[in-house]
Amino acid sequence: MATIVARPPQLRQSPTPPPPLAPALSLNTPKTSPLPVPNKLLQPLSPGSPPVCTPETPPASPPAKQLSIQTPSLLYPPHRYPLLHAAPPIYSIEARDLAAALEHISSQPLPEPKQVFPWMHGLHVENHIQLAFFAARRKSLRRTPKCIRTITVVKAGGDLSASKLKGAISPQEILPYGQEERPGFLEADPKDGFSVRNFHIQVGKMAMVSDIVVYGDEITDKGEVYAVAKRIAEAQALRKTRTDGGKDTLPFNTFVVTSESLWISVNPVAILLTRIEGKFSEFEKSHSHLVAVDSKGKMTGNVMDFCELNTPY
Image 1 (cartoon, rainbow, N blue to C red):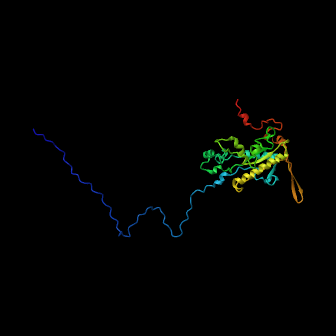
Image 2: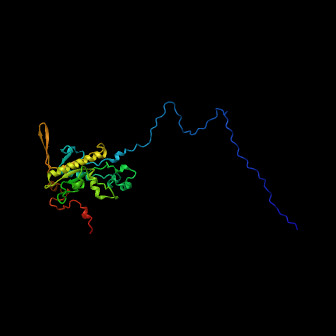
Image 3: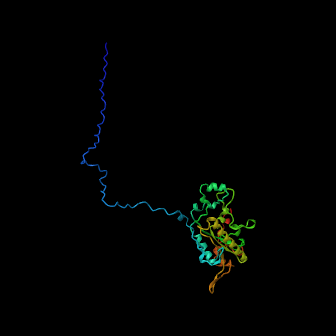
């Protein structure tokens, strides 16, 4: 028996014709042919001067110096206060003026932390560990910030167990004494070791950016009050010279609390009569909110004591 196998017919494959070629561009295109217009909404340019374009860019950012505006203070400039000593300058201030200045400075906003840190941590030039951690690539961080100005109160004699004003410190906390006595402030930045806090240097650091007021009580020798004020004023002048050559940084000044001043006219000049023995009783009587420890050595309770608040129960 024969078997018949049917095969499907094979379709003849023809190659796909290529797309038609676009007509070649001719250099002899007649001039009457219309040119393509990219955007019919464009206005035709009129002859004459080109239009003046007004830039729409935002105004330039304020200079960086405006970010370091110094904290305002009633003690600066000091020209409204009587001058007790010319070189170095020491000014006289009464109890009521000091109270007003402290109230004013306490109401001012604090600068941004990035403006005062890590300077507040202590960046001694010989402390390579501290410098490597905080200011390895930015030497500008070692400069004293220009955005802060405050007030430091110093009690001559250093006995803070009585007649202590709010926040008052002893001269030994900012001036070198004994074998280390020398001109200038006490070096606050630690020369060795590493710490990201260094709370114990904060008083000395803040004194460098302060107008400093010196006072004494009824038992403090008046010559000592003046001597402490003179050393502080000299230290301020020396630090300003070492910081920027005495050019850019605004000066900080020294004041002494005195009693009421009296001007008398002696031709052809006016002479200032003032008593350097400013009585602490003036603060107790008229500004008791500034008295932390009274003249009898008792705590008044008018000033918050963080040591007592930190005492465990």
